[in-house]
Image (cartoon, rainbow, N blue to C red; front, side, top):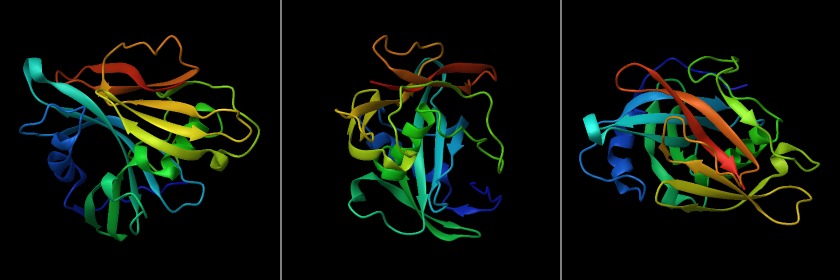
Amino acid sequence: MAVIHHTTMQPTKLELLAAWLPTRAWHPGGDVRPAKAGGFRLDDPAGEVGIEFMAVADGEGDTAATYLVPMTYRSGPLEGAEHALIGTSEHGILGTRWIYDGAHDPVLAAQLYALLAGRTEAQAQSQSDAPDPTVAVTRIAAETGTAADAELVRAEDGPDHTDVVVRAPGAPTPLTLRVRRVLRPGRDADPAAGGRITAEWQLPDGTTARGVFADAH
């Protein structure tokens, strides 16, 4: 179970994202003023890595958009993932945390597969041990084995998504978990998708939107 610590982080996650988001292929760049708009968490069975899917609002008026940033929080560097480092932050209780773009983290990839396979459930973003009932999952047909057996093969960024390719136990071919980086209200999953995750986020006018966060191919 992930424990949510209500404490300080310096710099904050949003401050780190203000510098990181414009460097992404799926962000238009320019001045960024990110705001938290929703999301959920997943548990790491080993209890070592924090996993958060954060919806981040940016822009105003016609330029307003909401981006999905999956992040992992680690107590030390993840070997071979220097390209995916968002930054480091001093946590008021846990000390220095290395914050990564979670799409490139094998722990998040395994747990995203586990969520789609029905082996774990989404957790509330800001509460400990509290499932998030607003996250809906259409399951994939999972192979036999534990969730941790799903191994990250690679992650590839696209114009509005990141494809997280995993190999499930016993599967003849890899499975692609497409993380939708640009969230669109009411967006349907790809008709070819074998499973999907939908969730909610807040729009600038205070209303709630729902759309696809990730789907499987």
